[in-house]
Length: 364
Image 1: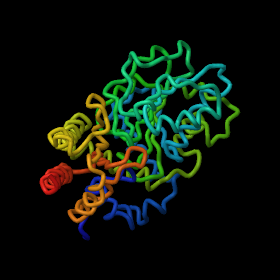
Image 2: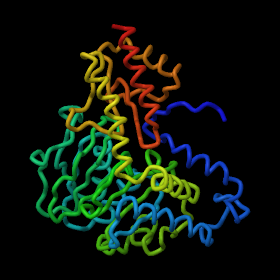
Image 3: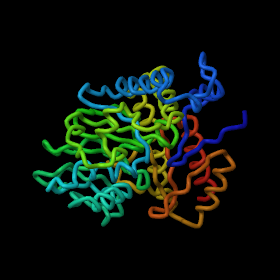
Image 4: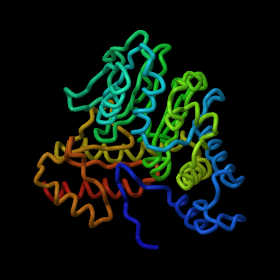
């Protein structure tokens, strides 16, 4: 097998090697089936067992209550940005509140504006999205259709530590970039969704966890492909689903349960990995500068800059020579971004931390 690099991409991102190797082993023919998972009918007993196990794994990992549906949809988080207001804002006569704490919150509210009245309960633009809002910073409507949040902003490297208090209003969360990275109290959410390609599998499938009463509120005049109710009634099989991507979600969640001990242990490992990098930044005496305010630092995406931007290219070149790839930051923040999702091994983060120390010593 060719040497694998440490891929710090924000997504698509690294997948667990054990899951990749299992998929490789059974790619041509699933055991006892005689065909690839990409060739079998989505109506077959074999695939039904796969999607059922993927759902069961998610329910175990996240302790999902029985009054929630688990849906496997397509279109990524971007499709959810449109589907949520289509189903719950359009024609409601209400306003939807959006917590705009970063690029993805900004994108979500833009899409929602096409379906009804929305307002920013918080907008972090003034400080270039360097923190998540405290409860005191939120200006929530008393009777909103829902409150939308992004739990982790990948570009800015900021993350909610706890859920905001929104009363009886449904809380809707885009958890794409920290999905399955830590335990989550699902019962606090009306909808909890994530595209798979950062933490749960390859691009192509989106997991939506939605409370039953919200499913029943979906309007009947929507096209079926944009209706949560249609997909819930069809068990996510209204049309041909992304069978291989769902199969990979099953393998990744198998790995989390079998090899990693669940989300509590995964969260501890994620905190350890993040601390390795933040400790280097904090101890650098200003050589490295973090983007996020310390109390809002992400465990998933570490965004930082060099005080001297002329060193950016040498940093990236020397990092690549050590097998440290995809570290360039987003243009809106600059500098670098190390995405250390759950499949990134501790060894990869240690290698990056050691390189950062060596690079500073070389250039100071």
